[in-house]
Every structure is written in structure tokens, then in C-alpha cells.
Amino acid sequence: MTIRLLVADDHEVVRCGLKSLVSGTDIEVAGEARTGEETVRMVTSVNPDVVLLDIRMPEGDGLTTLGRIKLERPDLPILILSTYDNPTYVARAVALGANGYVLKGDPRDRLVDAIHTAANGESAWTRDELRRVTGALATPRLNADVEVPLTQRESEVLRQLALGLTNKEIAQALHISYETVKEHVQHILRKVGVSDRTQAAVWAVRKGLV
Image (cartoon, rainbow, N blue to C red; front, top):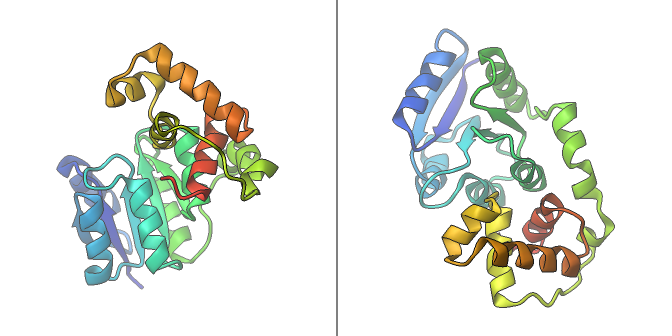
């Protein structure tokens, strides 16, 4: 039985490469999307068995798009595809219900196996990936529905942090200094009651801030 795959990536070279990688298998690229918005639309029109979703795309990054699709189609298997081995991305993907996380540098067999696993409705997460984020997902404070008095700027920094941006990238995005970002991040961690950025990102996801 053929597995219908929707590939979402803003780079044509990557999309063509993925089609080449799965050729000769029981996986058929049934649709290609370049943006988050286009991905959401094509889930309805293509009706894929699995979605392979890049993280950094225009018009809605991959993780935001993952959340939107899961609201409408909670049982649709979605795999995150990324260049970045970023624990914040991994934690958000787990929290939002992705079936797995594949790096663009992974071997072809890892990708094909992950697609097959997801198509069967199973988890393609590796033990190592889950171990890295277990602490963040299990932190008691993250499960508590507690209002945290973040300032507007702290909320802006937290949203950028949860998108996986570094302090330097946040500084550039918000047009503030690197030192100011560091200070805001420390205030956020203290107010939320967590010890690292990954836990803060999970908290932000669960509060609906990203």
C-alpha cells in the first residue's frame, strides 16, 4: 500500500532531493508546500498519510504549523524535518504532538523508517531525543495553570526563545542589545520557575504563547 507524503519545505532543492530519496519505495510524494499557510491548505486538498514538515518556513514556521494542523487533524502523523539539532525545537515538537524529528543530515534509511513508523500511527522518536527533553516536559511548574507576570518585552523575548532563536538572533529580531536579551531571559526563567530555555519553551507552548 502506497504512503502518500506531503512535503513542506521552502527550498525546492530539498523537496526535489526528498522525492529522489523516496523514489523506488512505497512512499509517494503526493504534494509539496513551500510555506506554513500552504501546508495547512494542502493537508485538506491532498489528504496525505504523513506530513514531513520543515521548521524554518515563511508564513508560519513549521512548529506553529504543526500546532495548527493538530488542532484540525489530531490523528494525522507529522514528522518534523530540520537542519537544526536544537533541544528547544525537539521539546516543542514533542509537546505539540509530532510523531518524530528527522535531521536533514540523517541517513536515507532513518528518513524512510521514520515515515513508515509514522504512517503506522507509531512514534518515531528515538530514545535519545526523548531523554534529552524528558526533564523539560515533566517539570511540575509547567503543568500548573499559574499566571506569570511577564512584561510585554519579556513576552516578546519568550516567544522568540520558544521559536528556537539564539540570544543574538533575538537581539537582532527585536532591535535590542545582546546583553538586554540575556537579562530578559534570566528574568523569564526566574518568573516561570524553570532552569533552562527548553523548559521555558515548553511552558510557552502550553500557555499558548507560541
